[in-house]
Length: 86
Image (cartoon, rainbow, N blue to C red):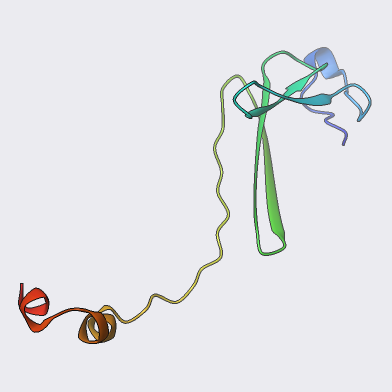
């Protein structure tokens, strides 16, 4: 990974400069580059998204869109007549 635009005064950081680490709670982070560099990653079904940001935490999410089940059909199958009417 090369992060040419995140260095100060045009300084670039290469893959050997930026190290991945994890907190005791499992949150991943970066070290070795600018101390305000943050990242996040999300993945689902073979798709991954990385976001790199300076100055604050960033959150991202990738999810597979699945068709919603028919709630009325499920209710007919699994709920009593009294539950379905309320």
